[in-house]
Structures are given as C-alpha cells and as structure tokens.
Image (cartoon, rainbow, N blue to C red; front, side):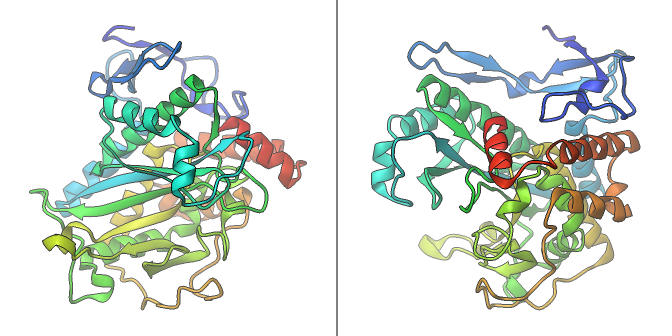
Length: 400
C-alpha cells in the first residue's frame, strides 16, 4: 500500500452490516479518498498451526491533498479528545472490556469455572499469547456467566489508543478462533433468552500531567466534581447515545432487569445493571484509591464502532462538565426491581428517534456523517423488520 495509502471510495462509509451500500446518503459513485496506514498501529498476529502470520495496521482517511476527511470516524474521536483538553485541560484514560461467545461446542461449560478454562484450551493460551505479541496488553481472561461466554480485558490507555486496541482485539480473537477451527461471535445477543455480550467502556479523567482526576473521597460516589458532571452528561444523553453504542436490531434484547446488562439509564455505585457503574476505590496492598475510581459505561456492544463510541461518550461527558450537571442522589438499592432511571430504548428504531430528537448529540457529528449513519441504520431496521427474535439472533451471530 505504501505511505500514500490506497484508494478509498467515500460511499464505503454507507456500507451496511448486511453487506450493501445503502442508497440515499450524501455519497455516491463520485469522489476519492486515501486510506493511509498508521504505522504506529502495526500489529502482528502470530502463526498458529497452518495459519500464517498476519500483519495489519489501522488507517486514516485523508483527501488526496493530505487533509483529514471530515467524516473520518477516527478523526471524530480525535476531535472530541482535543475539545475536552482545550476546554478542561483533562484527558480520558480508558479500556474496552469485551465479551464474546464460542458457538457450536458440543457442551455448555460451567459458567465462571476453572473447568471452563481447561476445556477450551488451547484457545485461551493462544489468545493471551497473541494479544501479548500484538502489544495489546491483555490483563484478564476468564469464562463468563452466559453459555460458552468469555471475557477479555486489556490494560487502560489514552482514549485514542484504547479505541484502536478495541478494534484490533476483535481481529486477534477471530484470528485465533479461525486457526483452531472454532466459531466465535461478538453479537450482543448470541442466544434467545440468555444474557448477552457487552462491551463495557471504562473511563477515568486525567489531568494534563497524567495524574488521576476522578476521585474525591468526600463526595457522593467518591467522584470528583468533574467526574460527576461527566457521568451526568452521559445520563442526560443516554437515549441518544444508545443509537451509537448499541446500534443493531438485537442490541436492545439484552437490556432490561435481570440480564446483568443495563436495567435503566441510571448511575449506580457498584451496580452492574446501571448504565453508568461507579467503580469503587481499591484499598488493598497500599494502592492509591484515586487510580481505581472510574466510570464504567455498560450500554455498548461490539456492533458499534469503538472510535464513535469513545468520541460520543467524551462529547456527552464534556457537555455535562460545561453545564455543571450533577448526578442525582445515588440509589443504593441495586435490586433488579429498583425503579430508578429512565428505561432504555426498547428497539434500534426508538434509539435512532432519540438521537434525531437530541439536537446537541446530533450536532456532535458532521452533517454528512450524521445523515449517512441514520440512513444506514434505518435501512438495517427496515430490512430486518419481518424477522422474529430467533431469526434476528441467528443473523447477527453470523455477522459479528
């Protein structure tokens, strides 16, 4: 490809997950861009058995003259990071926590068990090794609660690097699975009537010198004023954010009480059914509590673009800081029946309506990018409208 990149057609951004370029967007057959590799993201996927080593890199979308295309989703994130720093002097440190399922196994492993780790070998060993070789800094790997469900986490990094890593991680998982003749899916709802796969986004605020800025022992939830306002901004734009962070027709199937996902658009201290969970300080082994207090956004899944997810969360949080919004009093009743917070949108169509109604959130995006996104997602809703839950679940398990 070279340092000048490869031709890229603007209308490719209108490619639906269903495999077609959706008509009716601002982009047609006219126009040229360059997909230029960012060599700093160059990643090696190791050879496994008869599967060869693969080297890949993420790229930037530039005009032929070398300027960034205004509809670049990677550029969207960079813009949000720059505005947060310019207005507050702060940055976001983040990590994406992925869940996925292994399909087609002749057994259902015991959830959260050592036996599950043993039975799936050598997949886990190869996966952690491949992530380490790729420089993605794996931290934890363990079986989850759902049928043959797994979770992999990476070390936190600055917001841009964390989003890059989220994209690369999915390719590493698929590379290892293919080499071992396993079928994996990141679909948010891989099975009917079961817990789903989320992508939990962990965020903490950092000062210009890199020191933590989310902790205040004396305040509610032990959150600093800025972190509380950041979380309040996310809740204020919760419904619109869902169109961005959970953007498939099966995404909403994992919402609601009892799914260990998101019961409602609320913040909660250690509450794993809150949209925004406040992670507590760790006081073990003389650790610094300020390093551990963070926000966990639990409303995302792997059908979303990590660059857009991270950029939108930063934009929402920055809006909260601008307005000085505070979190409402935290309800410590984390039971599944707690009626706290607005209900989550029950479908992608309702999430898209919420985004178009939230003019602030819509304004985060260049007009052409917003129009394209809404057109593509509405087409996806229309094309899947006649499917029942089982058909939808099977389709998206194949797609992701």
